[in-house]
Image 1 (cartoon, helix red, strand yellow):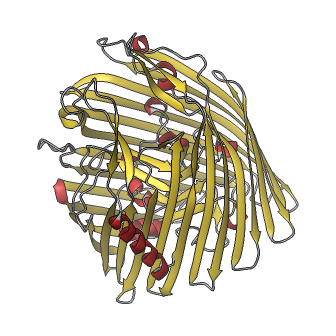
Image 2 (cartoon, rainbow, N blue to C red):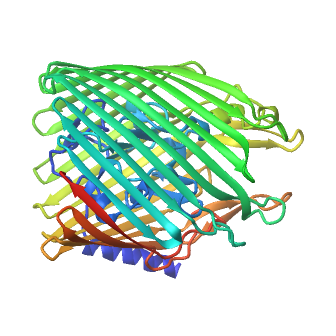
Image 3 (tube, one colour):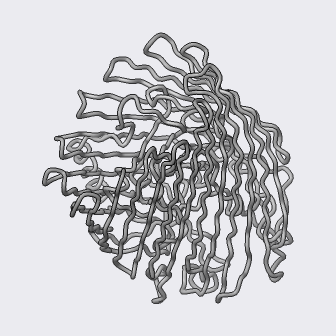
Length: 634
């Protein structure tokens, strides 16, 4: 208890000393594309928003997006070991598959892995901007968006020819490289990028000495054709090829991870085409999209392929944006078809199965005004699903600019998360009893917030939120008589409530401080939800010196005490265990050697914290890296 009090006192002191806004600390009139069906000013949103810019990525030289998200209010990141290990992100105490991830506006959650996004393979080199909108967003984006949306916007919108990249090496034989290029040819804009991160890793298990290496290669192509004013075509393609070794649980002896010769080989492919007809200020603007997303997850044991899960998703959509004076109405129709396949040898059970689902959605999204100071949004979505009952979700929000320096906002919405293919059919259908009465998870969420600025150098944001979840799914209900499992909806409601606080303080032109603190109370009935710390926070310092030629970035994140579940060897019952709180401190220094050429050094886990984010899985200690970056024409 004394340690907890001391930690909270340290966070409080940091907040007072370093007001920061990891909120909307961009220009007041910046436009975002994630909070509604059409781009709008950040000041028009009643939801909590965080924007991570390219400058944030470059000053910290972070390789994985998940490490950036640790500083976002309301976010809890859990990684099962070293780089490349399974990584889960929970928002405001919700489940890991209750946050929708978009890549350039296209759904990227993996149906073959429980509808979770594969954060362990998302690297930063090709990313221009990350927009995060918290709170229920199903009325805009559909299933998976119960707790929020993360939109990864790639570097595809350059207006001039450019070339940039980096080379990095360091601890555990790490070798990371990337190259991005953009070519402007008249009406055409062409871009390509490739990034590879690789490491020999470390030992994930508490015992043993086997290192678990990983690597991931990401390649992307972009093409944009501005045929004439008011008519444009955008083409994007992206692929990720990743490999990671991991340790399985020794269920017979310890119930803990043990050195294992197992690995995961993953291939992701995505492509989309967008045609836009109508200028930005036209009374009617049309948008037609076609998207493709596919994953292949191969599990390997001793180098031999075991069970492989595959998914494919095809999406077509049409949207019309209608301007009604100052107001705007977006009308969208979308059809999504998803296929899930599983292949593997027949042993304990037969994993081979083919499943599919289709949903046709209609969305109405209205952005209106009351006078010059109040902006409001009202959204509704109707889903016609081939497996579940039809569903209607909604969202309303309001933002009131009381003065130029003060803004009040509030929002309420409903969310829906359809059961995953595994919850419906199991990994081994022969050992799983399909529950025909399994219902989608449904939620109702509310939030109210205050943003206050003092001049141009200091500001804070405070948000209070609550979300009640009904029909929470228990994906493993075991029958000790038949030794079969099923999935079922839990009785009662699961509740998530709390507060987010963020500050920003520009002490000088060369020095800026950011800080955040989040309190989350997440429980299912009388039991606290696992891997959701009650207290978390961050402090970030950005310091430029030598006339801007050098730059230091210090990022400290606090992960509070959290619970987890330990499954000891049978017949012992599951146990609730406690994971200790910890500070993670990273330090990055950059120095400009010549125009377009920088050298950098970074140290992760500077204080050598000994911690676990998932029970039994060791995490990396202190590690150092050095490298070079180049940038021309940007």
